[in-house]
Length: 210
Image 1 (spheres, rainbow, N blue to C red):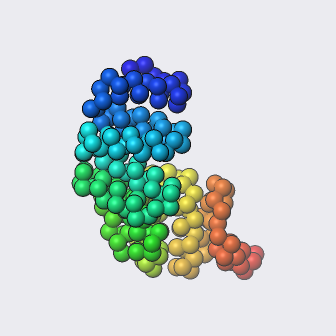
Image 2: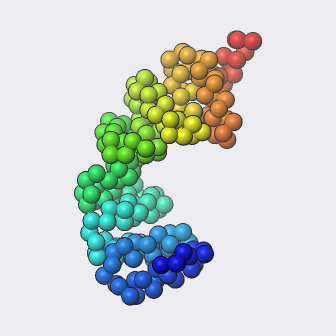
Image 3: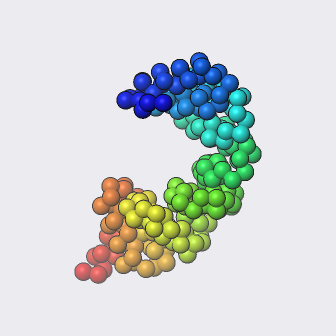
């Protein structure tokens, strides 16, 4: 199939593919992804459901439906679709990552850690899950584990600003102020908006060390 020049052309091509083979789950899924690109969430949702009807093991479609729920602020829906995603494909890292994210938003730290550990087990390069895991450990007060995971995230992307921010907070907790300053500066340099209370602590340390 030739490459589409833009989203509209891509959608037209996928509609043609669906018309030619309406029982192909992948074609419905591809069309839905194109519609998501246009923020046409209602029709995308219909197509993801059709994709699942045709191919019940298409875990990505469940995850995308979970993403649509998240857009609408429906955490329960997001959780349910991602549970179905990992049921459809037990090693589906993205599904576990999303489950962990929802638990984290609800303040269910232990459950979040369990899901995010699974996500990173199935895909150690899943930087968002690694970062959320660092966050979860920070919330639990397990600072060393948080640092370990933030470092893993930076191995994947040295300019991942949120990980520098998390390290700044973790090192403040440990009283390792020089490292905290270094990572805070890096987060700011990368455009991350560090929380005012963290900046205040960092500035106090700078004043003391002048």
